[in-house]
Length: 562
Ligand SMILES: Cc1cc2nc3c(=O)[nH]c(=O)nc-3n(C[C@H](O)[C@H](O)[C@H](O)COP(=O)(O)O)c2cc1C
Ligand code: SF4
Image 1 (cartoon, rainbow, N blue to C red):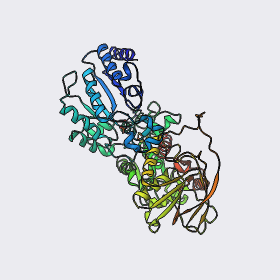
Image 2: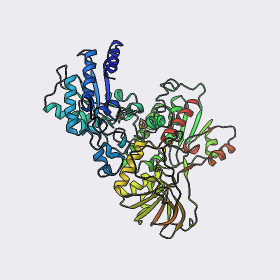
Image 3: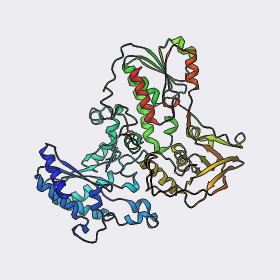
Image 4: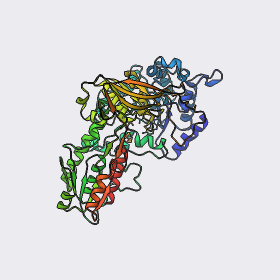
């Protein structure tokens, strides 16, 4: 492997590449060999956990020359002990307890430099705490800049110079897509450079816009990992929730093509789908009016951005507001708030096309006791938290993203005692492992009760009656170090879940329904009946419930073709 790494580097140089970048992080091969958490050899040269990495660098240097840059990605620590504490002793995780400490890593880095590494980017974590190397929405901006600072300080104080005789540049990574924050990291000398991953998928022009001071124009990454990670995990290819063109550059033009026939278009609803459709259509020369029945734009982004951990959604919401303002100045786009567009208005205004994007309708759990129960929808709680003022104990029915985020919000921000029940074995199934593990980990720390394989039976006075599978084979709902395999991958080792259902009563002052949204296309079909000759589209959640990812894609596609 070492010889071949040297050959690959020599080939790279011969091909005219500018340097090589080694992946010594996240539990991949180079890290497996250079971290005692994974390398448990007792015999042979590589029982010394530093030797494999040092040999590899030596070989690459030998096969290239001193002027050929070698960059190395490293984690300062797997941070497993810090993440899981005592849980490390009782689980499969205990095999990984003796990972490289920070001091060991710094010593290894010093030795790597002496063998020829020119530059590092420094990260934290591994697959078993995946929200560290893939920090989701709730993780703070510049979450690892203190990590790069440790390395930078160590190199400075130890006067460690690269083989080119210069200070070894240290690159910070992780949620640096906020230009002001990124600049601060550099100004405070926490790193010599910053690295951007997802922010460039969200907006490939990030560096140019930041340089020109056009920061309001930067499409902000929302940390959802729906497009970039979950798509390929679930069988697609990396793309982006807020930028439908990312990874489809060969299909979609950089700027939308001007329409042959200019139309007057009404867009009903100003969630991400409606806005994307409206802005794209306006850029193509159409005259577009967005009708929004509320007094703010954003649709579900308003409720979705309520919890503090969803500040990335708030950012995106702000971006969309400015996008409408800017597009309105340059193109024929108008936003009309507090107006519910009906057939009469649309006919009177003489629209040639209507794009219907009114969003989703929450599922009502009509179970016994429904009429008299003290119940609300999770989305209504997020919209107006005052409605749960009087409740102390709450039970949330539905452990999808909305249920779990509402649970965390109610507990952390409003101090409620929260139980979440979920019929399925897993909470937030089909959400990116990093995002779901992050939230579950912090829900556990907050003392939020998660009951999986539990079905609600009825609303009762002061609570709900549930049927709960109490079998020992029910998976631990707080387990965050195991990914859930996609449905198309069968796990032959998976243990069967036995069924031992038991009726239980869960006390609660209020029941919060979070059973998901159902597309409500009745308005669309009613409109179509009244305006049968009008070109009409139904997009976003009012076509099929989804996330920002699906909404922007449908809006963009219709905006390009209308
Ligand atoms: C699609 C995608 C694939 C990634 N693959 C890897 C990988 O193989 N190894 C790794 O260490 N990090 C990987 N990352 C993590 C990024 O390199 C980066 O550390 C992380 O996204 C945080 O930086 P950001 O906030 O600028 O995106 C990947 C990220 C994305 C979005
Ligand atoms: S899919 Fe989500 S996390 Fe990934 S780059 Fe796009 S906005 Fe960011």
